[in-house]
Length: 472
Image (tube, rainbow, N blue to C red; front, side, top):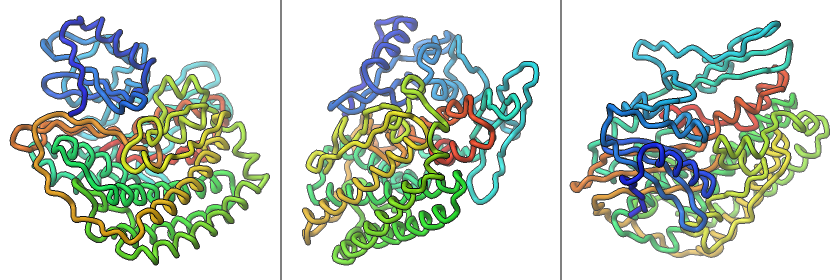
């Protein structure tokens, strides 16, 4: 079971100081609470995810907010206060995290001063993107502050799943959102396998790698297409989205569903995964050639890349303070990719060349995704070659024992983290999901500081985060 370091000796202030110290030593992933304790999650090099926890021995006594010194935990602590009745003192942002029962959203934080104006984008947006409210404070065209508020799609998924048999919940976990379904299913499956003492075969691990990398490919193609649109190049958007469609058809062929729902399940993979590997290889070759042509055209367009340069800069210090993950982290001089930082599954056998950039702007985030696209295509090609015609076994039956498991995998937008508490009867006591989008949304707001208002669509789409999995 996952190492949960429970500290009942340190007083509350000392525990908060220890969490802050751990945030400097390891990569913070998030925090959550159950009825007994609060848990702060980290990713250690090679060791993988682990937690520091403190017992909620007296709920009448407020805990010091770690987010005072570690802003990465700001959303997590607000959520714990709202949904798990954890009382924090000195919480930097004490607003409710989500809307009230009548649908009223908390007031937005705005900048005040002579000559400043405020206006709101959303929650309803053009097209079919999900709802979120962005309140912009600006002096002329220059953005002074942006406040991002989600929660319009909060469904209370975690509370709804408590008390259900742990294996059956995998279907619900897969549908928390469409864009990172395979990654989150991968993390959940690994958590239950840890609790059940199940080790899947090398062939299954290779198949899971193929599915996870296919998900990365179609997401990155959509992100680059959206970034082309944000720069005003319509043909780049159209071509990128057409390639995304091709990638999703390959997902359907390889995993049985365009969004890869239920392709990765506890104990293995679905029976319809990689049943026609010959055609998968053929389609992959065609997709790789088309993607390479698109990337050369996109990054060879000087007008597009000129708009990307120096827009939406996130410094390394800001990315570190706010807990950036994935391409957003690695575009700002970060070096953590879960696939190599704490290797799991077939990534132990097929090492990943980590894509990085230093400028922290839109161009850097797009460049990281470009390089990751090429790497994903290589990984799939090599995994399929190694897999050959080997038979994929049926998923192993799961006899989940009581305990806590914490897992993280590298999804398209970064670390997808799942914490599972299972009771003695094999039912869910507590399930907590930290999506990469949840971690990165605060970064979008800070990326707009000092930019002009018309840059918002461009900067936002260079992250292209999900609303649903952040709301869950």
